[in-house]
Image 1: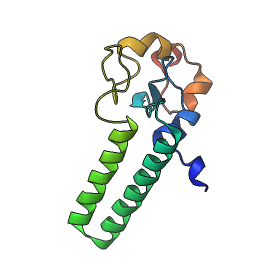
Image 2 (image 1 turned 90 degrees about the vertical axis):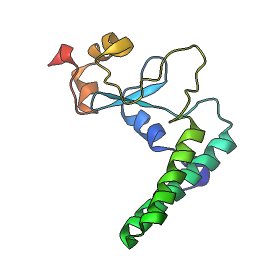
Image 3 (image 1 turned 60 degrees about the vertical axis):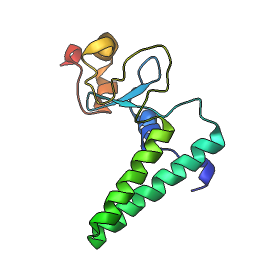
Image 4 (image 1 turned 90 degrees about the horizontal axis):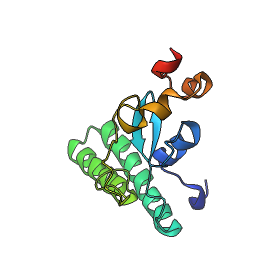
Length: 133
């Protein structure tokens, strides 16, 4: 894969799963997951995604080797990359809206939007909104 086509898990999943109308989250199994900051410079984003993928591979290697310290370091590197991408840590928007990462879409400000999704859309993330059950 060319480095210019690298995407984070959040970006790849957002292509498969419904994205909230404001573009901040995508939904998997009814849960909101924060997307990467869309204002990041493309070169910066690409480098951060490469860092993230490298750190994720390091987690796997450390687990297979049973190296708890290396695994912890690799998890820290994953966290640092995700924070730099805007998927964790301080929110990347500036309108004062709270971070709803990992909250259920059927509650809170996205409830009406989520309930309006079609059953076909729901099939993609494995949890039907209450309106279509």
